[in-house]
Amino acid sequence: MSVAVLLNLSDGLILGVDSAVTVFSGSDVSKVFEDSDKLFQLGSLKVGIATYGVAGLEGRTIGSFIRQFERDNHTQLPAMPLREIVEKLREFFLAVYIRFAQQVFQLPFDQIPAENKGALGLIVGGFSPDAFLSEVWEVVVPVHDTAYSAREIYKPGEYGSAWFATSEPIQRYIKGSAPNLVYDIVAFTQKVAGRNLTQAEIDELVAVMRGYEYPTKIDGMPIRAGMDYVRFLVNLAINHYRFAATHPIVGGKAKLGVVTYAQESFQILE
Image 1 (cartoon, rainbow, N blue to C red):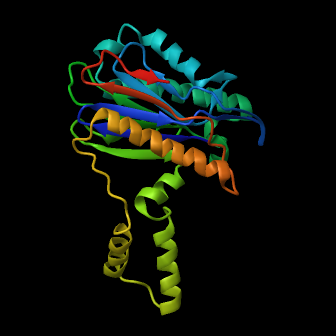
Image 2 (image 1 turned 90 degrees about the vertical axis):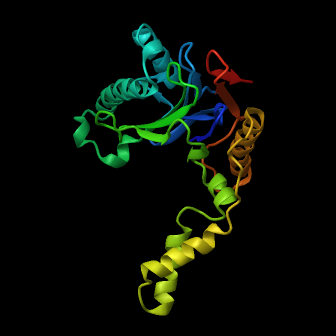
Image 3 (image 1 turned 60 degrees about the vertical axis):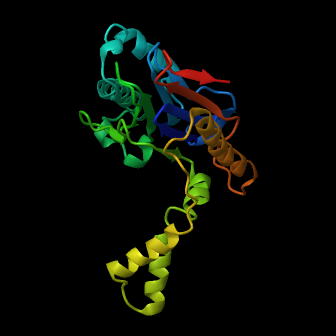
């Protein structure tokens, strides 16, 4: 498992991940590497990629496939809008993923049970050519299996944070509750009351719960403050699972990358 965090600001983009990856043998964990790479600079572009989910394919790391993608497209990428780069990444990784799954299960891909297919997430963010505002996209393979189906998280000029994969500690800290708590409260209330809640009552409950969120001032946040914020959130997840009774494998150390309007390329920080 993994945790990934993004923060899109007016001055640029910050991506953060933990550094642990898990290697499976069948359904069993065979090895955990705590200093892996899940954060990548795409060539010399102002584009970064954070990964989560499946840690490798065909005995190779995800990073090695990203480098292959760079080599195969190095003449086209510098002139491409980020949306088109995201689409080419989606096509590339979907083909690899389908080939790998069919080799493992010896079945056509559409006959493999959905619960056995797993998923690879790519958070792709940065600047299109000549753009002065950053944007962020998410590709989930094999979920995004049609052309231009990747999700645009933040358009240029939209600012905010988001978190992915094993990120419930972050969700609880910022939002004040677990993701499904409102559904459990609604179900319990309906059971006690002996009737279904109206949509207006559910909306009122959601508004009450939102009062417990920790608001963060994103607009106008400087890049250096943003880097501290992303590092804090990644470390929050890492340290939570260090002590939690149930232990999804999130660990190692926080790794960050950043790109701003003033930089020549996405930079990975130590």
